[in-house]
Structures are given as structure tokens and as C-alpha cells.
Image (cartoon, rainbow, N blue to C red):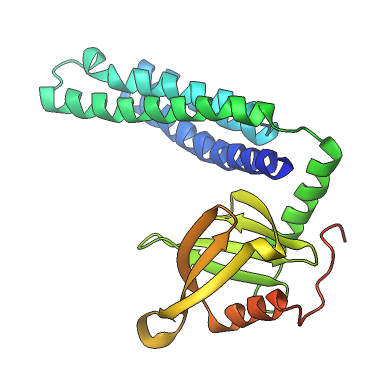
Length: 236
């Protein structure tokens, strides 16, 4: 459960940066257009983003969720505040606002699970240090790191750290998973365009992903899986 808390903190921090940038842009545009409602929405988003960047924690789920609900509600009602707005424009604003509200509610819905997870500060600190180290390693040269890509046109990079006890997975650079060696499998199912990489199926206990991986990284994983390489402990 420490991995779940670390994942949520990374999610809060990453979204905080996004909200801060979007909020600042909205404030600038609102001032330029003389639209004070838009300025207020931008300030809400910017404030939530800066707060979560400076103090990332699972409680940030409430902060960014509430901020998105407020922004979505204001966005949905924008048609009432803009004179001479066309009905089609008002409908688009309402739909976009509804999506923001739904997204905010989903963030709030995650919070009870995150709050109820085991809170072991020492274990969380150790895992955060491992995740930080893993994210900074050179995957092209480090034999204990493998990467694979998921998604279609918008490819997402995923990274697995190969340790003596098992793997630490950074999925889409946000979600953190810990898996024992026996619970992680990667199977090749052909090659991609021009044969430059392999199509792979990644099984991590209850999670299954389809993606692409270079042949060199697939061989790294196979050697680790068979115990043919000496892997350092997670705590090292």
C-alpha cells in the first residue's frame, strides 16, 4: 500500500504543475478579455496547482478535485455571463464544464481509498527514494532497467527496475507498482513496423498491458527473470 500512496503523491504533483500552468494562462486571457469570471477560475486552478506542487500529498486529491469541479461549474455556466453568446457555443461550454466536473468527482472518489491505505512514513520515504533513483537512471546502459511503450499515437513510456526481490514499475511515469519476480511476465508476440521493436504482453499480477519493447530490453528482462544476472536489493 506504500506504493499506492507514492503513486497518488506523484499524480498530485504532476497534475499540480499542469493546473498551475493552465491557471496562469487562464488568468492572463481573462484579464486581456476583461472577463473577471475567467480570472477567478484561473486563480482557483493556479492556487490549487501551486499548493499541490509545494505540498504534494494524498490530500491534494481533494484540492485538485474541488478546483476542477469549481472550474467546470463556472465553465458550464459561461453562456449565462457572455452577452450575445450563440446557443451552440453555450452548449459546447456546458459540455466541457460537465467533463471537468466529472473528472473532479473522480479525483474526490479516489481520496477515501488513498486515505485508508497503510501510512508508513519510513517505508514511503524509502520507496520514494528508490523511485527517484530509478526515474533518473540511464536505461540505455543500465542492465537493471527495462522500458516499454504503451498507447497508440500518444505513446507512453513505462519503466521497470529489476531488483533481487522483484520489480519496481513506473507506469506512464506516474503509477508505482511493486511486484515479486514470480508475478511479473513479459511475453513477445511478434515485431512492430520494420522489425525495430517487439510487441509484448506485460503481466504484473492482476494488471495486463500490451506494448512495445526493444529486443535488447526484452533480453535484459529474460536474463533477470531466469536469475542469470545479479540484481541489487531494493533497499540498496
